[in-house]
Image (cartoon, rainbow, N blue to C red; front, side, top):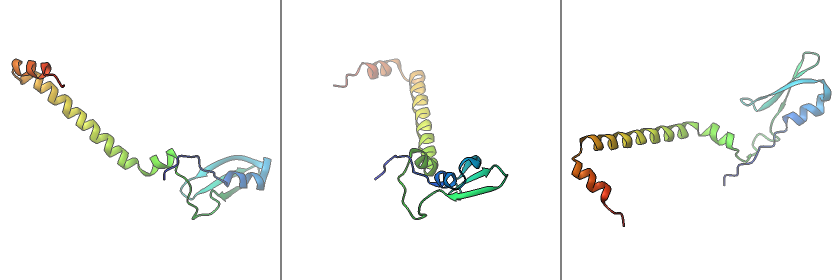
Length: 111
């Protein structure tokens, strides 16, 4: 079941507990699953961003888009191409078809 909730990341909390007010800046290293903090004295410390590496976290909108961007891009491209083909078919039908055929198509009732 897909539940779109914000993930509870613990790296920030761990670093705040370790260093408190001595942190200048923090950034998330998504590739390694850690949070990296730059301290007052110029040193760097990091903490894991998940409680347990094997923990199955709930999916978020950003994580779904990050994982499925190829599929969504392919579907969007296919929709754009199909829309373009439909517009081209409508234009060509309007310019090349017999006027009586066009009148018959537009006057036909659907019920």
